[in-house]
Amino acid sequence: MKIGILGGSFNPPHFGHLNVARTVKEKAGLNELRVIPSAKNPLKKKIDGPSAEERLDLTRIAFSDLGAGYVVDDREVKRGKTSYTIQTLEELKAEHPNDELSLVIGMDLLNELEEWKDWKKILDIANLVVCSRPGFELPRTQEDLPEFLQPLITDQDFNFFTLKSGKELQFLQLKDVEVSATDLRKWLRSGRSVEKYLPLGVELKIKNSGLYAPLKEKIGDYEEFAKFVANVLFERKAIGVRGFDLRPMTAPSEFAVICSATSTRHATALAEAVADAVKTEFNVYPQSLEGADEGRWVLVDYGSLIVHVFYDYIRQEYSLENLWAQGKDLKLQDPTLK
Image: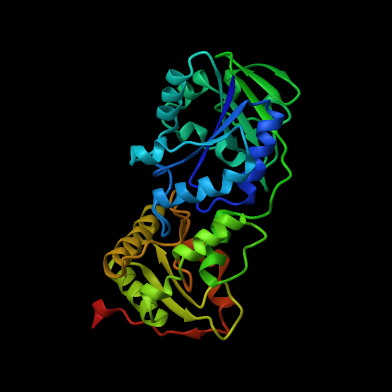
């Protein structure tokens, strides 16, 4: 048998996931596709949302209509801790010693593969089926592959690359569904219609269970919340902390707090300090936390408040304060100077 493995957070599962599953199963000639929700991704920060068990339930609902050949596998959720792909692949190989395994990932994740635990061992155990993603071009030649993969290639035949391990890299062009789970989480929390992107059963489960409820229910007054966040940044020696009420203008959020850091490491530390303080005070994780790995521009999203932490010269380059000129300056004061 040819068995595919499609992992992810599925937060929430949407038509894009179903499109990947159907297309890969057909084009890669798989007998079975195992869909494996993760318990915790070691490369991602904790964000607000459903528990691993709730995501597993949503995933089962989403894939229930696809019929035979699709299996939602709960092993990583049952494991209940940080999920490493290599561990799951080793388990599956032990269970299916005579079958051919293929790990399904997006083109965006291929570029990060060398950060994964035992990534070379992954390529010894399974083929890699790499799907197109918006904004990423599929490689046409060996030289188009990420540098760390190029020495491992022995042959190419159209969209197949043969590895020294004997396994294959296969690249598949999908008809992309233009939606991301990040967007869906924001839209769900703001009450925007998502029926175009979610299977009906998933949408009903989310509504009936109160998943992805607006953070405002826990945070309350967002202007006071902005001041709380600003005080955390002041205490951690952030530079040029400013806050804006953006409700008088069209903007992605109602409030924004912006500051600078003395280094990329300081920028990441400031963002993480905000996330920790908010979790302690309000029992809320960010809806998303982006850019912490590089520390040049770290964005901490709390829905109606977005916190922007810049390595200083990057802030000057983007000049967000000029874009917010029609908003109201919150005139934040550093409490440590009183």
